[in-house]
Figure (spheres, rainbow, N blue to C red):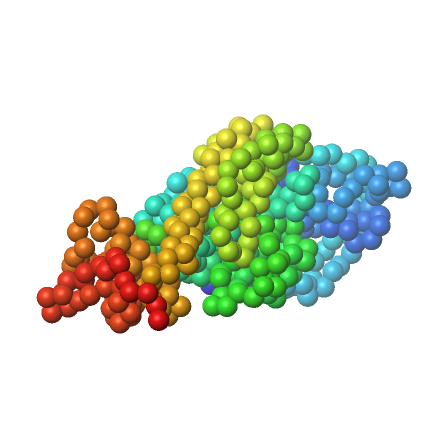
Length: 453
């Protein structure tokens, strides 16, 4: 269902169950999200993402006008109907014919406790669906990363919401998936408004240029989610931006299946339900943040060159996102403002696990670079590409560990693109790092080499 526009929805399965309850339950006739017409009058929208309203224009007495915030969920207690007006049906979010609207006086305002029905999918099925384009996504935590990017993190006392991600680029075959493919997996499952610029509550952006980085930092979307895709050439200006990220991920064992998913209405139901779910209280968020700041710098951060940098409050953002992700398992629809379980420990563990995986991979890459930089016996070091260095270091470590210097050519980096592996081996052979034996079927590692001329 590519190209679904949220504002074009009228009824049925394209609306989440919470939106349908606001539209169809007679007890919710005067419940909705405030949309001001002028200083004293407003409509009550039945969704944050459509223009469908209650069929009434509400007029506030002067003593209540300061008690209403645009966009908040309220119940208006009507006093009397003043008149009826006819509004032409030229709004794409409304019916095509003219609409009769009642203009009513407001007697009082209430903050309602409207139940939020849980989404149709349980949490595990939601995570499986959103990552179905990948095989073994759990091995790289991709199912969790994709799910968290879709449900996002709410705004809090510390600012706007949203989650930032960045994939670590490692040598992989073109057809097994890259960080760009992960970003496209997320984008393919979003309605039009969530992937284009505008005034929506949530937006997801694939970041692969300086212009995109600036947009991430300056956009006014309440919840801004993004995934940084490392371009071929990273400028110093891009590095200086240092956009905070909360979801650093590594692609190592997962594989792209080839067919990208399309927007699924069950996934949309889950996402919209999550976006409607209220966040923890400010006091709970402050408590999480204090813990995060105490532990933020006890571990080494992702210290090798990258575009984004780990957010010291990343664990808090993830914990907030987990309160939404867990709605399919934990929330029973008891009330709009609900008591939620403490997921702060899960937020810390997820953040640390993602960081540790990134640190492990970055650490290996740094060690390779340091070895080639320090050891001047390596000839023509500048001629080698990252794939060449990785293959040589893996072969050398295996030789020193196992005591054998001969390797079957076909067994070297079996998960990578064969053409790239063969080209790398040819370069290593050309510059004296390996020798081809037995007709080229065996690769012999050369540990000591002649100094560069």
